[in-house]
Figure 1 (cartoon, rainbow, N blue to C red):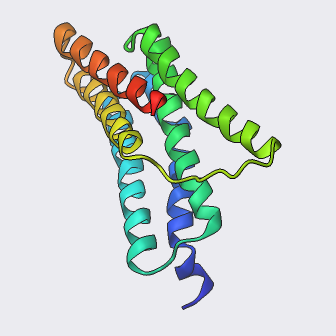
Figure 2 (cartoon, rainbow, N blue to C red):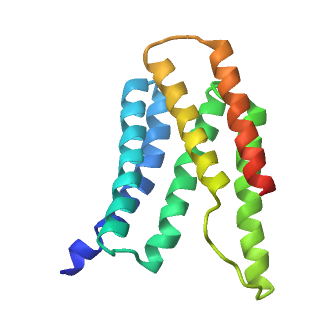
Figure 3 (cartoon, one colour):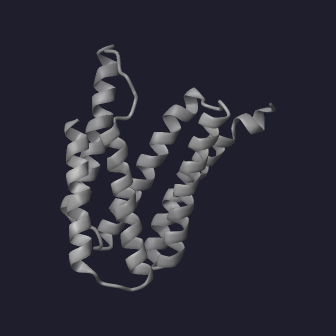
Length: 170
């Protein structure tokens, strides 16, 4: 198999990294439908790169680090941007950013102390990511169709917060 084919999952992950700031730009510009489409495309690259890597044995050490980093980047950029635009409550954005910062800090401290670090995601972490992605997608969809559903978005924010806290505790 040639080098290009072996690197397709990494290329898709790199595309997701590039789509994160584009999503933020579109949100700020008020291009909600386009932002939703780019966010969905980023999600699709995540699904496809993971499938290809596992199905065809194209897993790489680089991809094992880049994939979760790309996911975090997309979510953090979306949470921060939507908070700046007053669509996500500040408390939720702080919680999401603090959890991810704590994870990164924990890994850095463990490495600095030469402690063994197992970098496998927990089931609650995966569930947290799914809930956060669903929350962002819901907000972008509501913005796209110009619906103000305050109770629904508050309930979704609380659910995202609960999963984020559970993931952080785990």
